[in-house]
Image 1 (cartoon, helix red, strand yellow):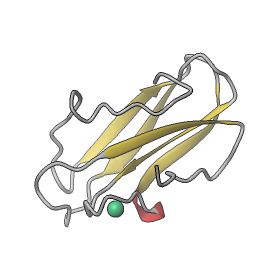
Image 2: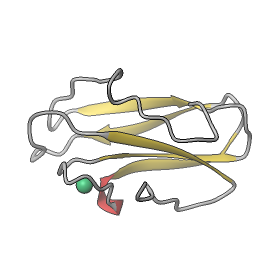
Image 3: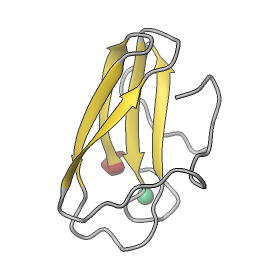
Length: 100
Ligand SMILES: [Ca+2]
């Protein structure tokens, strides 16, 4: 991930996922250490990343550290494109997805 800033990759990055299947999201941290990394999927496609849509969070990630978040796509996920959000926050816990 690049930073510190917001970057929208929705026009260039995508993946095909199947409901009720499990995956691992591998995230490589940027140049800052002691980061908290977390990710969400807008599974209900309502434009908001709710707490229930958070797939995981990892604390104290070193600069250039690599983490893996395991998740299962809910069976009820509608077909079509949904967005994913990944955040990197310095030295914090239980981070939210923000409303930006
Ligand atoms: Ca949502």
